Image (cartoon, rainbow, N blue to C red; front, side, top):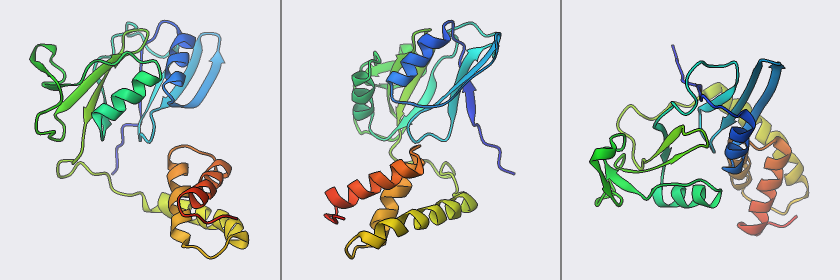
Length: 210
């Protein structure tokens, strides 16, 4: 039986302030449900992440800011730090050593750039902290299997949308369009936005102009 961690609840004091912060980071806003005056659920998903965060009103009794060292896996610690900084987050310098133990952190990335060994941190306005960890190669057993049913459904959808492009485009390799479309959909784009992104990819990268 699959048991997947889907959502982590963050304790925040000001829901709108937290929402503004995570929107500015470029994380996808999945929901903002004011269910009752004393109950509101806001959900965000980091780019291309299988798990999300929620915060709101009436969701937790934890002290705002008490969520510590929530881990975000990134492929390039320097690039991730730069992107977050450009979106307004105050991110620490990169360090290595024991990422969750401040007393054992050493400035700079891991000298050998080993997977799981380079880190950086930032916090949201309430003080909930995030730990960036550079993961370039996963340990055995840490790679998630593909959901075959979901993949088949996405392929079917992609084929349907590619038909419109194929009807007016010059000869091209269908898999190029498919790859761009599926990548956009998996990053949270609507089917219409994904089709537009695939069209731009074909024009700008593959030079297939409709």
